[in-house]
Image 1 (spheres, rainbow, N blue to C red):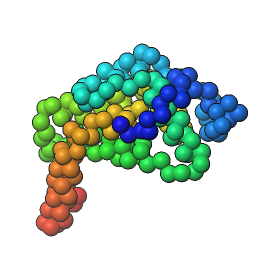
Image 2: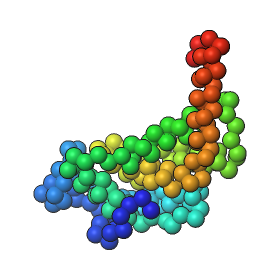
Image 3: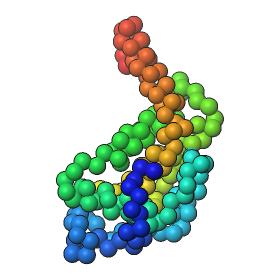
Length: 172
């Protein structure tokens, strides 16, 4: 798991007011994790990483709290940023007409992109400052064992294609 194991200290209905939580994050006063959206999140988690244990709302809330605390202390929190870069690679591989991937991996990538594009059913609203993409980042992290080799091969293919275009003098 990508998070520390002290999940029991969190709750599913986070009062993020600075006075109550000790964390001041502009734009966040309350963060509620909907049970229906958590079910959908875990359903997609099982599609992209069948062996991965399901997450509880307390675990997601605990992760959000830790990210917010680190951000409040002005510490760099690369977890979400790095996974969103991987999300961009996933999108690029899916739409690249010159790249063919195995159907099971394409299915995993499509499920992740579908989750990210369905903002109405996101576990954490996308416009929430600092943690707005944490749920998508967790899905990507869970799927990376299956996707890493394919994404690395795709990146190598893109480098080769770019070098060949430059070598023969075509416009990129």
